[in-house]
Image (cartoon, rainbow, N blue to C red; front, side, top):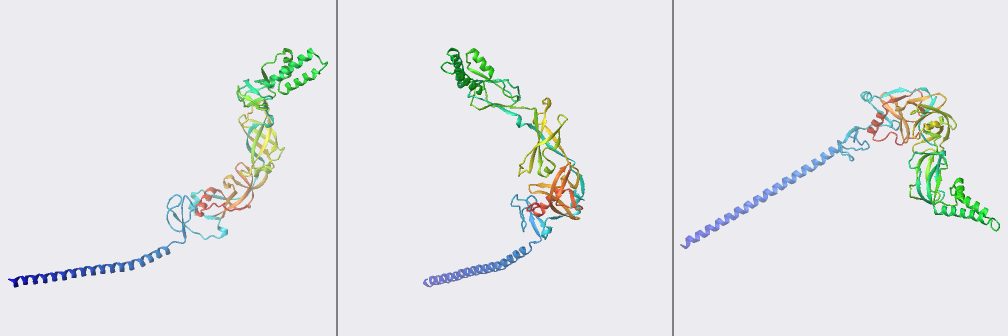
Length: 436
């Protein structure tokens, strides 16, 4: 029996040993498989990384150096690789690069189809007659020499206004307003007292005549009329309110006080404009100033009334606005029966000597703050920008004083399209950096 149990014990030990060996063998195999997998992964990485580097080098190498990428909405954007516009996010488009010399930097090339679709026409420039007359557009304005202001001679309260509407006509000597003034009332009482003392005492001890004259002068200086002072001398009863009359005739352009308001000495009450004469004022470009001279004869046409008035230029502004490069000329014209009104449009025509000069249509000349330019056809399909100087303009014709020669072929229609195409292709304004 003991031998039997011993046998079983020994058999179990052998089986356990076998199982331990099998477990160790399985673990070993797993470790081996893991090691093999790691080696394979590392080997693959070693193969892939150089391949990516070579691919990146190939990608960089394949970047086309003959084109650049720009945005159709923002041509100032220039990139050497495709992508999106950093301003608006639109997809960049490829534009071929052109190796232009400095002399060709201001040129643009168009195909025959582009020229046809853009309706671009060029023609040989020549001399034409221009300058027989210069027509300026202007307006009628108040004659500043005929404006007047009625001011308060003494401080007080305006208790009544006899005119309350802008545009009312005020005749000279018409009542304007009633004023309550302590100062003026005291001065009137002083005048009455001086008169009474002169009549009762005489000039035996005091020269009351001089006091009367002094008091009267003060009332005159404060705006009372001779008639009002004479009436005061007769009645000997100073009134609390004093009526003031207009010293000028004209149409009311502004009322500066309301009833019940106080006015200081020298404060304006109303302003008047005499419309017997008006100013016809027009703006003139500096390039047209050679055709304008002070005291020159002109014709002023008023289209609203179908009237024409002859006159002379009596003022040319000596100062030119540097921003607009515009000057001002003025003609004084009579206003018979007050038919003319400030604000009406007028045409001022100045006559000049006719002469033959280089001319271009107005649409062919591009203008901005830097000056004037045109597009010149260098050869068929090639156009270059040219800065010019202009003279007078008559109708649709513009005088060219410098920058072009007789016989050159200039773009007369489609100049704005060429300008836009240049900006699209070059990403810059063709006028930038140009000097005449």
